[in-house]
Image 1 (cartoon, rainbow, N blue to C red):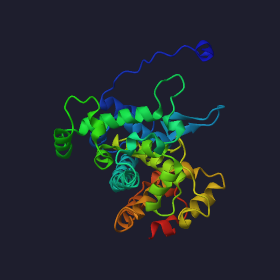
Image 2 (spheres, rainbow, N blue to C red):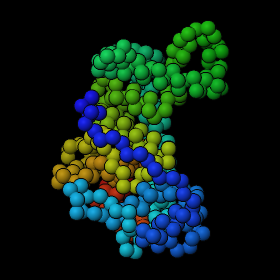
Image 3 (cartoon, rainbow, N blue to C red):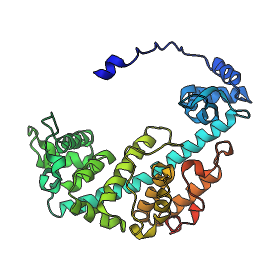
Image 4 (tube, rainbow, N blue to C red):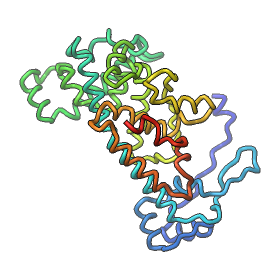
Amino acid sequence: MDFLMTSPLPVPYTKRHTTISDQIKLLEKRGMSIGDKRIAAFWLSRVGYYRLSGYWYELREQDNSTLKPHRKDNFKPGSNFSDVVNLYLFDENLRLLMLKAFSPIEVALRARTMHVLAKINDKAYLDTTFFETRFTQPLQNNTNSLYDNWLEKIKSSVERSKNETFLDHFFTKYCHPTDPEWWKTLPLWMMVDCWDFGVLSKCCSGLKMPWCAKIASAFGPIPGYILQSWIYTLNNARNFAAHHRRIWNRSWNVPSPHMPALNEMGGYFVHITAIHKTKSPIQKSNYMLLAIIKYFLIWTVKDSGQSWALEIKGLLDNFPSAFGGAKKLGFPVNWEKEPLWNL
C-alpha cells in the first residue's frame, strides 16, 4: 500500500504504430547504416521493429553521465543493420540447437523418473510419501498445496492427450466413463508420456532427496540437489526457446542453477566453478546453460553429444564480430578444450 501511495502517477503511453518506411527513416536518423532498404524492409516486416530492438540494443550509445547509466536512442558510429540481422539469425540457430538437445534429455529424464518410482508404486504420483512435506502441505492462505497444483497440471496434461491411441484404448477398456477421477487410473509408465517438461520439473522439485539421488544416478556423478536445480533451469530455458524468446545475452538467474563443488561431477565443471569463485557471472550465463545441456547429452545420446558440441562450435565461429566474441555469452577462454566438450 505504501508503494502505491508514494509512486508517481504513470506516464500516458503515446507512441503510435509506424510504417516500415518510417521505421527505416527513424533508424537512419539515429545513426544506423541501413544498406539495402528492401532487405531491411523484409526483416522489419518479418520479425518486427520491437523484436529486433532487443538485438540492436548493445549498438546504442550509453549515457554514463547520470546516476543510473542508460542507453541513448542514437547508435554508435559504424552500426549496421546487417549486423543486427546476423545476430538475430545467430540467436535463432542457437535456439534451434537448444530445442534439438532438449528432446532426448526430456525423454530420458521422464523414463528414468518412471523406472525409479514405478518400481515401488505403479501410481507413485498419487503417493505423498515420495514427496517432501514442503511440497504436500497447504500453502499459506491457501487450501491447496504445491502437490495439489501439480496434480491439476497432470490432469490437464492427460486431458490434452486423451485422444492418443494408447490412452483411448486404456480408458475405454479399464475406466468407467462416469468416473470423476478417471485420469488417476493410469499407471505411471503411461502417465509420464503425457507430462511436459514443466510437470517433470515440478515432480523432481517435490521429491524427497533419496528419490532424486536414484534418478540422478542414471546421469553420471550428479548429486540429487543439483539434478533438481538443473532440471528447473532446463525447463525455464526450454520455455524461452519454444516460445521464440531471445537467448542471446540472457542472464539465467531465476534462480541461478546450483554450482557443483570442485570435487563433484568428475571434474567436468571444475573450470566453471573456478571462474565462479572470482565473482564472475558465469553461473548465470548462456555458457553455463549450454554446459548443463552438454552434460546431460553425455548420458542420453549415443555420441555423448559430440555432434551437437561441434554444431555449437561451428555456430560460435560465425558469431557477429560487431557484438564481440564468445565471451559475450559467458564462454571462458579455451572452453572448447575442456573435457566436457571432448568426450
